[in-house]
Image (tube, rainbow, N blue to C red; front, side):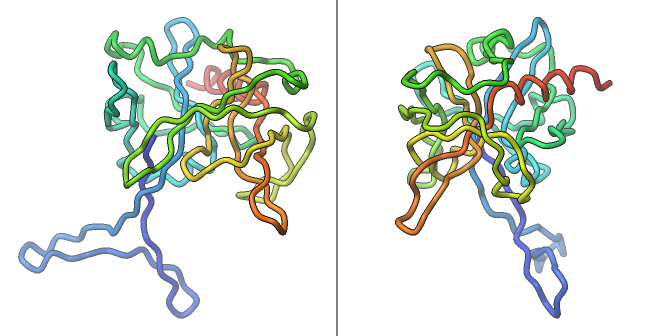
Length: 231
């Protein structure tokens, strides 16, 4: 998944968005920069959702796009507006989770990208110690989003930590490998098919990046249910 955010500059203590102006036409074009995050598609019956970290969703511009892995492994770039019912994200009141409702009549070729909601764990518990976990996401390599799969292991139970983005307390469990730029929002799979959580960000100490904080899957489930209750 690719997101774009605008440039800001602070002048005299005030924050300003930066625009270019075309000298010939006078048209103002907002200066943008690319940012990368990962999301997952989740289906509950005929309902379709896109799930990512709230701090990824909240940083999006009006023209984000989704990068999918094509049938032969090639990246396919799709404007998010072609998939979604507007761009109104539903954000969990405490956790770093955001859900976007998608159109119900998507092309049949998208079906293989969706994870059934039944595979999103809803119990408030971390994966068992020793269970093999996989982080599946995208990393920006040479300016392009490249799919990666990283094996990780849980090293803590569910615990309350301050979120990296807003410093508010929320539930996480810790895995033994740091994430990378672009892996925020990436699903963490357990047992092959079950979603155990999504990546929030990297934990560091004086020696550098050492681990990652993961949002437990029960909070993903809660956010999808919240989105289903809204009109």
